[in-house]
Length: 233
Ligand SMILES: *Cc1c(COP(=O)(O)O)cnc(C)c1O
Image (cartoon, rainbow, N blue to C red):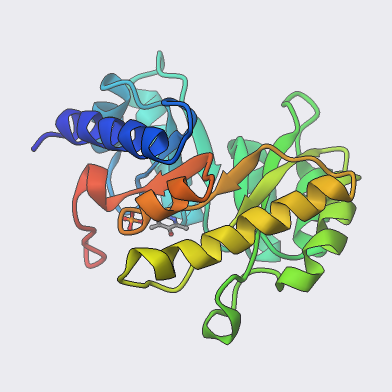
């Protein structure tokens, strides 16, 4: 199947899931996760109407952005950094992305805010929450989400949009829903504390329906669009 066909199927599946769980079709945004795939593949997806792309590895992402621009300077793509961030790598992220999904420390947020060029709109931010307990090392612990959100919300170069999670894989639908429900509850707590946000970045190829059932507004999908990743390449 072509990338265009995969995207069309995926958009249909997303709309069906949204309607099944009482949500409006089109209420979930698709972020195409293009890590390990080249510029030509991104251009194929862009020509099929996909405008936002997620990347995990900084060097790979910067090279791909340049390659896409060199081949197709007409394309206006929105790049999201979804991987973990080292504090010595914040400047290129602040300069070359529209969104960052995996903030779990105030120090990284401060640097991104300071380094965001004044010529660009504020960098859109999601806080990554550890919804799987000790099984996962990245993400802020649920009891610390509010304090981090309060700190990030004051930073002028950033715009806090919401929360993100990568739960431990689970096979059955009900187990998949639980961590997403927790993320939704944490977002409600932020709203009640006077920090309204509009984004829940949750759901990947294997657990997208459960995430949509629990209110995902962005699903981050790689394999179902581009096929299996080959990290050896
Ligand atoms: C790779 C990755 C994805 C996409 O995963 P698939 O299972 O290929 O859909 C989504 N989110 C993050 C943070 C990732 O690293």
